[in-house]
Image: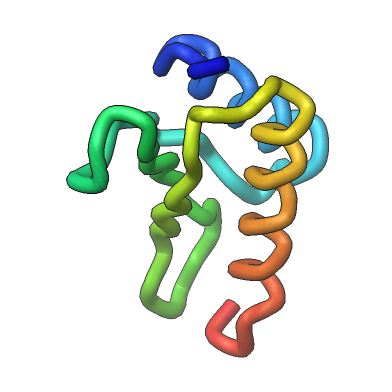
Length: 84
């Protein structure tokens, strides 16, 4: 099952608004890896140390629950990096 970009944006937005109030979803687009590869672009509110934007690379070739878990997992990884 290939999620649409509209679905990918909705799911990413839901994950962010539910669990990460310090983040803002800027957009979702297909990346250079082909139409199944999606880039989720996120801004970190109140960020004072670059990078203040995060780009997650996620495959849309997944069911909604798996896509949701992958978004959450990648956000947690980025937020736990020492620069943030």
